[in-house]
Image (cartoon, rainbow, N blue to C red; front, side):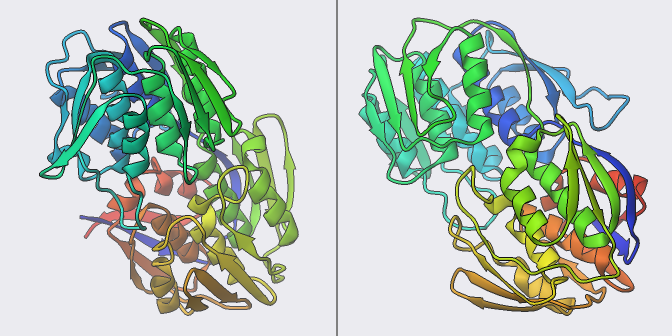
Length: 428
C-alpha cells in the first residue's frame, strides 16, 4: 500500500494543469448505456473511480476502448469510446459497486433502455449517508416496479412514463439518474428542486447531443421530453472544479505564486470569494486562475458554510479548513451536506491544529504552526486536506491510505513536485 512523504515549508511557484472532472466523467459514461451507438468521451481522467466504472462496464459486456492507453501528458486525459451493442447483463454486482457510490448512475439508463436493472446498494467513502431512496421514489413515479432484496435494487418497467418529480432534498446523482431515465420515457418529465451543478449541465448537453430533448439544466427545474431512441455522440469532459479548487487552496496555504490552468473560473466563484476574504490575491482569465501570497504574514480568518452549488462546495471544506489554521483569528466551518465529513479533524489535530467540533460545526483557531506527523486519510477530500497540511507543516509528514486520494486526483504528487513541493510516493 502506497503512502506519501512530504517535507513541508516550501513555497510553490509555477503552473498546474487541471484534468477532466471525475463527477462529470462518471455520469457521461453511464449515459452511454442509453444508446447502441458509439459514445466518445475526451479528457477522461485516469482515476480509481473511473477505472472501477470501466471494470463494471466490462463485467456487463460493454466495450470501453482507449482508457487503458497512455498519454504524453498526464493531465490531458484519455479519449474513451463506449459501445453497448454486446452488453449481456443488466446487473451491477456488489464486488464492483461497493467501492464507488456513483455506480448507482447505471440504474436509470438500464431501466430506461432495457426495462430492467439489478444494482447493488452502493458503497464508497464513509463521509455520511447518501440515501438512494430519492432515486427509488423517482423511478417509481416514472412507473417502474422497484424492490430491494438481499442488498440489491431490482427495477423493472415495460417503458417509463413521464411524471412530475419533486426531490425532498437536492441530489446531484439523483438528478442525473432521473434525467437520464426520462430521456427515453413516454411523455414529459419535470424535475423540481433539481441540482444545479456544472456537471448537471454538462450531462444535459451530452444527452441533447445524443438526441434528447432537455430544457432548464443548471436551474432548479428541468423539463425532459422523452424520445424513442438516442444515438452516439462525442463529448469533452468539463474541467474538474474541485481539483482546481484544491490546488488554489494549496497555493494559498503554502505561499508563492501558482497559476491553475485549464479550469473554468466561473465554477469557482464561491471559493474565490472566500479566498479574497482571507486576503489572497488572485487574477483570472477565461480558463485560468493565478493566486499569490506572501507567507510571511497570517491570513485573515473567514467563515464558510457548505451548501449545494453555486454556494461553497462540501468537497472543498476539508481543504479550506487547513487554510484557516493559518488565519489571524478564529474561523467557523458549518458542514450542512454530510454528517460525517469532519473526520479529518482528528488527523489535523495530530499535526497541532487547534480545532473544536460541535455537531456539524468546526471552530478553527488560527495562527497555528503545524508539525509533521504520521497521519491517515479517511476519505477522498480529507486526503487532499492532509496533503495541504503536509505542505505547510514543519519537518516530515507521512500520509497513509492514500488510495482515497487516487479516487479523485490524478498524479497529485507529480503536479505538486513540478511547482516546488517536496513530495514523493513510496511503498508502505
